[in-house]
Length: 348
Image (tube, rainbow, N blue to C red):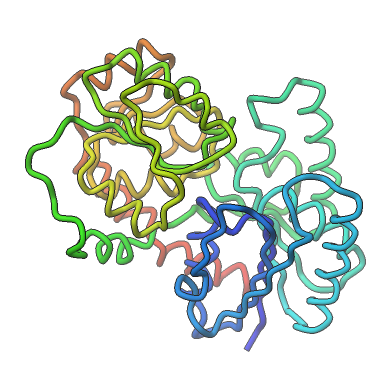
């Protein structure tokens, strides 16, 4: 049985259900080991999220911020884990782990793949010089692994420009997990409630909380909910916004059961799992016109896409609704089973 080693600094958000989905879906065929880093939003119950056969290794030195001391320590620990676990394949996820693992394992004969979950040089909050530096870095690092596994079509098109070995495996949703969460009795469906617009994710630059706040303040008669926590929470000042704090993925789904519309104000995305969940639940979806969002939401077919705050407000107020079409798209194209089938082909 082959051993697959996953490495990531961010075992939370949309990366967690992707890695856990691969491990849980294929653990009958492979032995999985997951190395994960230090983040304040990593769930405390990882043992309940992963199959008991998956080995989890916590590396406190593997952090998002660059630190010579921590990075050297993380590289040393990753190399030790590779020596101990003897993996046949190493699958690296996200930017920081992508740097530490590919640099640290330079010369290692094991097959290595890298999934960016959104290339760092595509971030809209960086200036052009920094984006150029980051892109150059990714081109160099691409030569230190055996291929890039892109999680969405746009990421795949970008990956092909920086590596001759790129493959597309779109993120998949564990619809059975969503169904079980929705069926739990703790939260009954409310027949009558104030129209509620929600989003889910870390409150940081990527998700653009400033725009979310602007839209909420322009629609005072609607209730807005941000499911999550983060460094930019102070930007959510409109009195009709509720911030839930960190919730388990199961609780996010249960909360969303009584919400009406999913709003994404993101500046950039990979292929967002939270949006997939909303689509599968048949919610009205209004999203910013950025890659990842507009790959899932075809304007006027599976939801609506906006350009600015004024446009978003008008779409939230109109009666256009594509819940059935969105649900069908997720079922047909973005299931966890399809993702696992494609991963198995690559691993073999």
